Amino acid sequence: MSEQDQVDPKGLIRESFRIDGIDMSQCRSIFLDWALSLPGGIDNRDAMQRLLAKYEDGQPDHPMVIVLREGLAEVVKPRRRGGWRSRDR
Image (cartoon, rainbow, N blue to C red; front, side, top):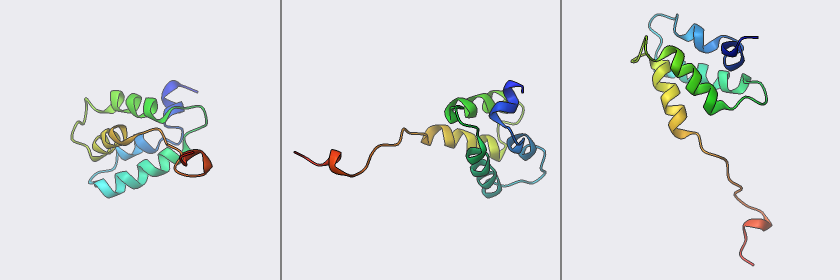
């Protein structure tokens, strides 16, 4: 499996760039499906950076490029939000 296949195993991102007239909402839906289909052990932030490196130069204003950029900006490490460990002692 090539490096590109590892970060886009179903080819969802690749295909989104081939769809004429695709809009932001469609790209967000495809992005969500892509994110859920990433194999374990693949860092989603790294995967987004690789995809941007591949597609951004050729189509910088494509809605999927914008969605990928937004994804990079919003990726944060999840924090524990409750339970006994978060309470003051």
